[in-house]
Length: 191
Image 1 (cartoon, helix red, strand yellow):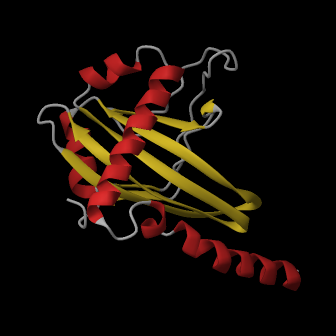
Image 2: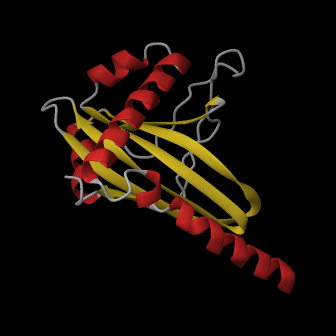
């Protein structure tokens, strides 16, 4: 058991610097980071509209939406995710740059790259997300549909009134939008 704990700590100390926010987007260059986040938003929306026909109409009709790119790492019993994103207000056209971080536990080993898309159906939900950020202490789950692979269920989770959440991996829409222990907040360095 002692050897497993030492191995886990060593792996965590090796990988943690690789997942820093500066290492993921922009390397301390605010304009470069904004550009990378805008590109990640374009990619997330393209992936969503490919997986869910009609998603562009849902985004256009919403009060706003937010996209996040995240890198998740699970090392033995420690799991973390960090990333960044953009909240877009459809009414004003204004973008707010955001951060996300998650920490938790679970047995496993691996790295997962994924995108989240939040669709805000009410102005209040979007306002709360922008001004206060969100802190999920539970997890959101919903069935998934990924082209021919899914069972035809809706591919979104609703854990906050007035908001729909899509989580996508390289395989398409995820079977679960897991947001356990995840915090979202405005990125003061980029706004």
